[in-house]
Length: 102
Image 1: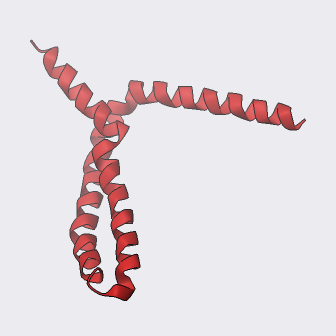
Image 2: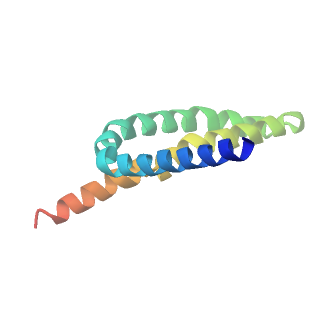
Image 3: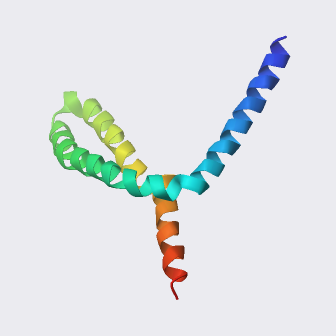
């Protein structure tokens, strides 16, 4: 029974992953064009507020661990904004859309 449930879970995970990739290609550019400005706003706000706080915390020896954790956590929204598939899909949509105009 355990092997059956494990196989069933793997199959369902594969089907959902495949469906997600297809949905990303079908509607990713449209969704990305709406979501990307929000992701950029959150990432830049956190970067401009959180990074100076973390850099100040790096001065004191007792708070360096917290500063390192803060910088690590600040990298997540910035990485989401820069490397998200939505940004790639949106930029590819804009690039190929401009090529089709010629």
